[in-house]
Length: 292
Image (cartoon, rainbow, N blue to C red; front, side, top):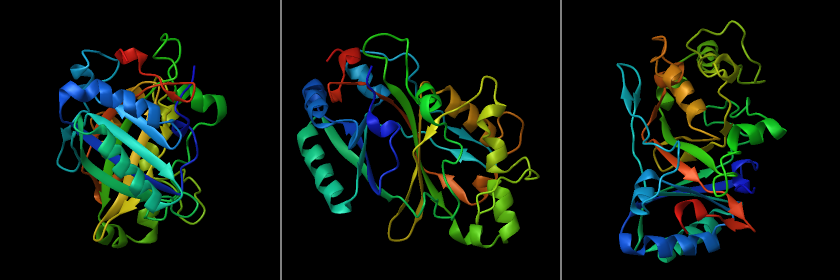
């Protein structure tokens, strides 16, 4: 069993997220075979969307459409794509060149529809200044949380990934005093200390992975992003199934108990998609589960 190394590897200095729409369906299989030769799972992490699997006349148990939801204070959109690639490296220019190469080699089967440049900020902080991914499991627990096993050849070593682009409202965040900011996250910004008396709406309280039944552990591999006028977080979470993410999202939006995560006071998701990340074999993507 081999898995894409970027799933559990450290967050890189630079990242670039690509989403592709389906173009010429007749060329999809050939393009995926080409991608399997290029992507090593380390520098290029790959996820296949549900629409692509339909074209291949295949299903992956557990993969579904990202659930959209809306309340008065929390809007979560669903923006599915056929193919997702997370490019990982140290040089932004190199990642741009790699994305051009991928777009050329995957055409006309796939059409690049969006690209987001991201980066590691400081010691691994969100643009609000708070540490990200503090509660990620470690060692074997990380593998158990993120990597599928016991499902059979072609599936063992694979992962599911949830991807959302969040846009921060910095004026709204900066209008809060320091205590309210800390209470929104549930941790102190300066030392990452978890606040035991944080309100139930704090993000830490809403997403405490051990508080679900069964427990909802996943691997966060999020990265900050910004363009000329906006910034936020590319939220990326890998799991052996989609259960953990959906359990946390339901609680964040208040669907479980009516308490909405305080994050929605100053940040908004503008995309939302699920993908299946194939396992690897001899350093390349193993696409046998989709007939390739």
